[in-house]
Image (cartoon, rainbow, N blue to C red; front, side, top):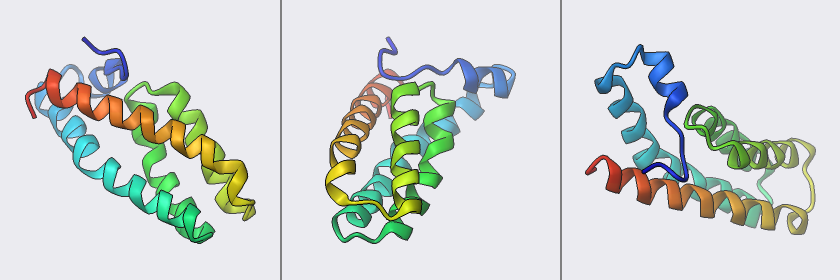
Length: 114
């Protein structure tokens, strides 16, 4: 039962093609956590370009999976990277995104037997 994600956009985009939906969720489960590590590293090392580029890469997937809060927070991280902001201001935002993605990955993995 999807509490941390919503596949309605994925189903609408795919004309209810279960194979396409499976590809999207598999990509989410395998790639987004790896990309998130790069965002974290970019924040920790003040590599604003790296944080920005990986946040930018994750952004459409969060939107597609109906993860609205995480989507808006990744926009903040993206803006932080672009503006080369201070690390302290973005840490809590990143922690929130990371937590939401971890919950969604666990739930999707369980829901779809991945």
